[in-house]
Image 1 (cartoon, rainbow, N blue to C red):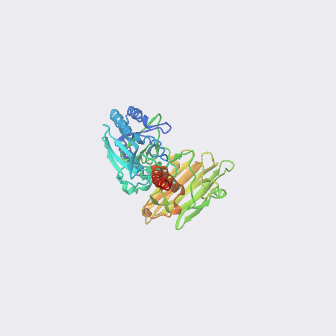
Image 2: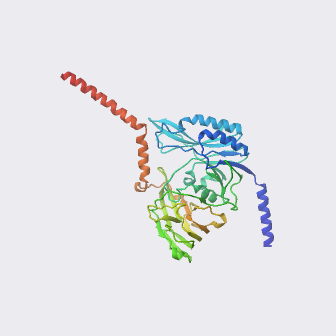
Image 3: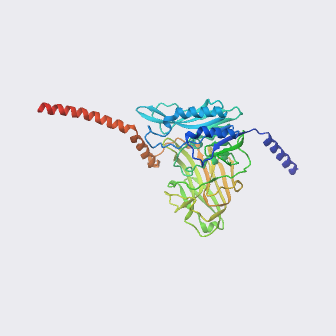
Length: 466
């Protein structure tokens, strides 16, 4: 009976897959040098692949410069018109991220715009946010959705939404377009690989300017300048078939001063050992078994745990719970850094990490290696009672830079944060941005006007004295 049940189940699954409707999504190969001037030709190239929707790459902007001279910001209308005409000619849905400069209260501000063009070149959805904290009355839009003529409803996101938005807010949408860059100093989130973790955890299709992720199937690869993937309109694929994780050559150093860190016992790990690490009342269990592939290198591994508030950017503080194995050169709490040049010569036969997370939370697998990880070497299991018990498992993987669980504790969002937890570089850069804008010019104009009045009065006084 069990064999018959398995056969019937497999046939039903196969039939469901055969009947599932699909669509074709396209992105631009990230190795290509792309500017806004090449958008029209990219749209034309995507139409040759019979793609239904194209996500254009976000252009590089030098936003630390004077806001009056930022590349392409003054060409917003010109670029918008060009993309619109190209989308109409190609009969293709196009999503683009454009910066728009607006004048307000004697200063310039930059607005980020996610724009969706339909097959007729009409803008059918706009998602707007200020580039940084805004002092102007600028109408922000909430996360948008748009529906296409091929029957798929998409959620429209910016990069920070993956972390800031509660997953419950995004249901029941199963297809998302992500465009628009974000930066954060939160440890375990500084790399660009969080998109794959988010797609895996939600089992939703996520089309980004950096790649196409099909839920638990991972990254969809392709050849040529335009990468095209066929996606299930109901969301990601249940069976992992393609590499999970991200091949990474480098990532910035991270401040782990708020984390509890315990060095991995290299000798004990060759036999397999267990250790529990806690931060306040939050504890994670680690089971590690390794094999040494040569002489030990300069990279050490730490078992890191955190529970509390992290400052995501200048305006958001978020609840975080994390358990991870992290590779560091030196393993200093304020300087955790490793790259593809720092080969560890350590292979992990197995890593088991588990913890009890708060109920109003979402867990994401974090995997960074110098080589892509095969999906059958990885798994994450969840059980929910009063708390969420989550276990992340990794087998037979070399050169692991980090592996673990990043959890968003939404119940702690928007609590106040202390100034000492704010990255001082952010504060100084914000001040520098303010004083480097035209406010400086306005200040000197103000001083010069006042000096002219003083000079005029003094001159009259001197003449009268003569």
